[in-house]
Image (cartoon, rainbow, N blue to C red; front, top):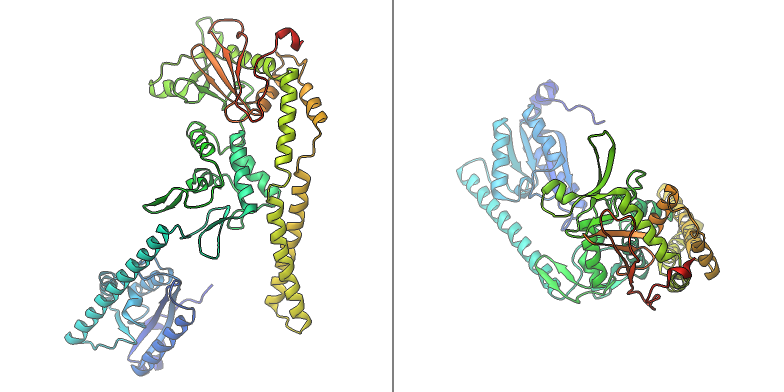
Length: 525
């Protein structure tokens, strides 16, 4: 903790007698156009100014890499608080644009200090404490304000000119790097992670689960940090991944390379609007099996579990359209919980657990396995490890030549830690690469045959593994299945108060084409 400052009254009598006033120095530099050395230069100039004017310097306040356009400067605010407490009589700044680059702001700050009986003097702008001097000072402040505004306009013009040519301006999203011409280029390793995030969200993964998985595998964010539940929304809503260049009001279709196709991106936007709990962990309700997956077919709003008690005291359980329940703006009636859950589970069993569909699913898994054998993630990790290995080699070479400092040791330990972490991540990724045989996939799917449709644990497995979303209409149910992709659905006729759903009529739109008709029920056993 910094020692407490002396006030005017705590300075020794000798110092007070020798000095014409008690002063502090304020210095500031902006990171975008100045060097660290400028802080020391300002302080040296202000110290010399204090000596020439017989001022006793009590303390120095310095704001590094902070714009003068704002008063939200930590050291500046500390100085203002100390001024109010009467610690000093004079503030010495290098130039007037250190106190405030905007004229009005600088004058306001001077006025605030004057109320505390504190004068502001400038080491490089000695205008004199008279009418002519004050006029010259105000003129200089006007020049500073013009310079600031003009520089901002020049910078903005340059950025917009770059944007018209689809050049990189600002931070790059995950998946992209800047090429030698400062244009967007795809980083294969990062792009693979972006595609994985979109695929997993479409498959029903929660944000929490995705974050946990990526962190366990040692895959960092764009900034090199850990993933959390809030890391994914910006990625999933970033239209740049579809090839659209965006900067302020500049929009250029096809201005950058495509990572995510347009149809997938649009589908994700719709899912984000209708999926009410993408951030939290996957919800599995023992009371309401379809919670988080059942949607109103009329308005697309989630349907939630509700219960009521009849006159006889018996409990009744339903799913209700959330929009109708809260806004009274949908005509969808409540539906019996047991009836809809039974219809969904039976429909999934009748569709999935058939020989032809199981064979087709196994083919899809094999195809996916082949296409994702090397999706770039391992390559990205290996590329980074190669860079780290080279850095370690360079440091070791420097040590052999007798160059060894505390910072060298610290950097070497840091790199060795990252090297070990990357090695573990590469091995983890290799272990996670799919290696299932077709026979194993078929065997696993066949294990669901013969399950007890009334067993809650079996029903929960069916819904969790195979069902992505369910849309309930007045006369039918549309089930989107996890394994079947975005547009594959099973349509079931559904009539309230009927004991069972009728035979499912299925539609398929998946690559390579699944079976195009349902087999006879007798064939399924």
